[in-house]
Length: 313
Ligand code: 173
Image 1 (spheres, rainbow, N blue to C red):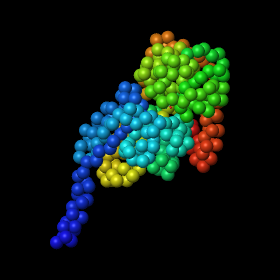
Image 2: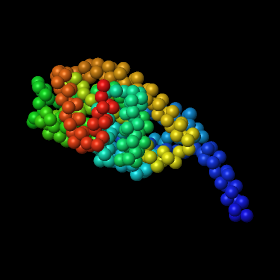
Image 3: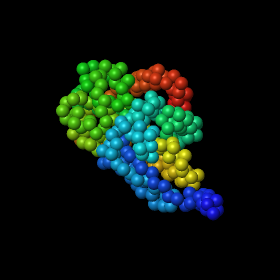
Image 4: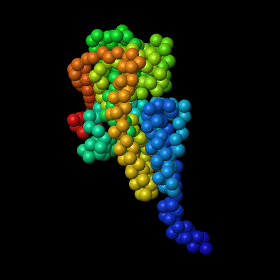
């Protein structure tokens, strides 16, 4: 009798798995009112509408749910199945996380030239993650200041950083203070910092424009924000669910066209609120890359040279 039940169940199980809907908890390393969450929200809605009976995302919130610099560990350990984050927030897992800022080819190209597969190999081995989709691309970082400078020399200035900017700003003599985005406004308000690094977009989200007097041009690197997933949770998905998630990942990347337009608008808006630009030459940008790749190669002699080849123009 027992055996019959077992056999019947075994026969039924695949059908059950096929028809089952799974719910994936997703956390954001950026605050809930920010540009990046606003960009992701319609995507989650589409995912959940199309994913009925297959997979659903349960967005559990931003850094109030899990602090910014703990998001990577939470994905690695499976506390959440998915996260929207930049690699700079999880360098505690692997130095390579921060190398994604050095990509000079867009993610569609990375999927063709082997870069995307390479990233996934490293993310799988070192962080127990699947790198699903890059949702911010073709967006430079800038240095924003409350004080004027007339050459690329930051000595005597305290600058808010994340790993993205550490080596470059240090090479210009800055004193460095690392904070998550959620602490930038207070640091500016209290005069704890004289400036900060951030992409061209998003400085209005948390009112930093009120405290910002200058933006240094040109921008440098390529801001990366991506969706990553816990690898065990990924392996538990049925082939149908995996295909669905992959399809949605591509749909999210297909939305990256908006950034160019938004970046233009944000540049104008910064000028409109009186943020002045300080202009340096191409040597400033070249140095940013030079310093970052030197540091990357030191931190990861195994992967940095190959990533450099795959990421560069
Ligand atoms: O917090 C940051 O300045 C940072 O590292 C980052 C990275 C990508 C997008 C936005 C911010």
